Length: 145
Length: 192
Image (cartoon, rainbow over all chains, first blue to last red):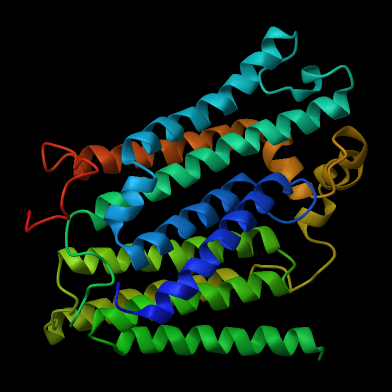
């Protein structure tokens, strides 16, 4: 799709704000709609937009599939690890009250960590699945019929 | 009738129209576009129903990612639906009608739209989630508090399901070429 100047420039303008919106949805999820899952999908859609306009190969170079495999697992590890830390500090699994001296603060830390893990896993898995599909046939965006 | 109700009805009519159009189309590219549009209308409906969390997900997954995955799949298969012989069409029609009738019958048991005395409204958990939450967790977005804290185990399970889905897709499709393309590689040639 390299020859479509308008699409390319609009996509360039849009990708960065989409990623910032994903981060906003991620870390502002305690106060406004959204959370890890939504943020992860929005981040993945920014990467997919990049792949559609600049080619999957360019996106693979920016975000290699091998990295995605690690971050996908790391997200679940962060989530479960938060639960284990709660246990180490004397609470039940995923009982965020024990993460800080003040239970309410503990809940806030716990939610932030857990949502971060969810976002990481979702973004990585969605992008990885897209890579696999897009890497097997013609590139999406090249369809002519 | 309030504006909101009018908007609700208008969007529902849109959904029906889009659904009927999808059923009539043979070419699958417009179908992929229309399913994306369907998701977008659904997202608008969810926003009207004050469920912005779900609306965000629907817009991003339904209208964005799924459409692109459909398009990528058309690159692997063909983008035209094969005509079905009339006999099988009739079977499909009967199955659809029976299922549809069952679903309509099920809606008769549902409480009227916006009713105040539904089980959800009267459950003791409502007090806990909507009132006590503000002291226990003190996060304005109750949805995040419920998903992340009160139902943290469920969300951990969901995240694991997503990871498992990703691992499954990568195992089935990811290794077809023996060797991962390195950054310096030229774009794919006709692999199969």
